[in-house]
Image (cartoon, rainbow, N blue to C red; front, side):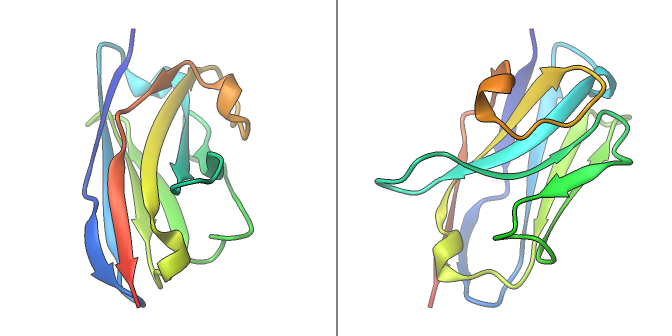
Length: 124
């Protein structure tokens, strides 16, 4: 079992930055691909980006490419989502997720473990 806890959300003005953290316990994250998703009210869960277990390979949705960056510190068992140039449409609850395996994964149903989410609100 992997327990994931996100933190770092909050209220920020458009154009600002936030860094979300996803701390894991129960298992070492070095065996897990990690993903970030978000869900806005009334909308479906949206894929943001994913990292393989080494952190060497990442993939991002077009909506955040060039603005968001995933990094991971396997020694700290933590994954990060750096969000720059935030827009009001980035407002959502953000979730990290983990899946055991060597690759990176874009579909939410490929992930076995989820955090509780952290709210990000971007004001215009």
